[in-house]
Image 1 (tube, rainbow, N blue to C red):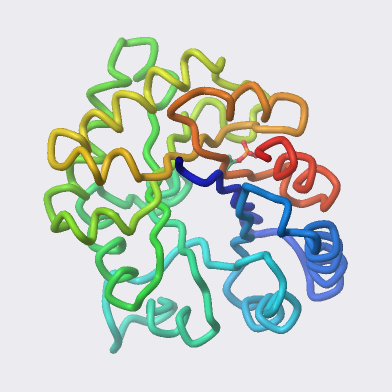
Image 2: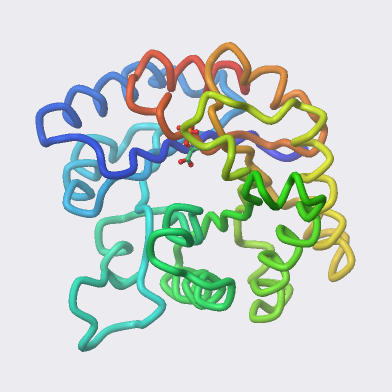
Length: 252
Ligand code: PEP
């Protein structure tokens, strides 16, 4: 059985003080981890990763980053290398979030290279895919998400593929309060798993596929009850410890 995984994506929010409060709220709330089936992690803005490490080391909560360079090192001003994230004991890094694709013109191929770079440094890339509203209305959801996933399949050998986490995040549901219905999300998750299964059934069976898009404590349980939804990637609701904890507990 796949473990459930709930990851907070704080985006470009927070300050040293507010993050200190949030980190202790999350860590204390999940201290009794032994009884839980769900894993939890927070993806912080890069300057706060040392703070996350200091606050979360030894707790059940993992931490990670929201983006990574496709390059290992060198003259790439402003970029952060996967090895640097590993230096701060990050376990996860989000790649291909729709905001990176939209505002930084990240292509499917670049996202795949970022996933490779993350894996090379021992990190788990959380590869995001998802369609825009226009694409959904044009009946293109399957074509879009499968092309996004295919770029990753094209560069990863099967053993490496088994080390990624996938996240289906319909762009129209992110930060809008509009959530995909459990049936809509399940349909896409099953499609993605089938695409991985065409390469390797065991890898597909073990792959965690998270849903993201206005997941909240009150809709999380129904979404995560779907057979192919293995947890959540949480934006807005991860900024309040009580909401984030509510979603992690809904996954138990
Ligand atoms: C996200 O940005 O990954 C996300 C899912 O955001 P929200 O939960 O706010 O829709």
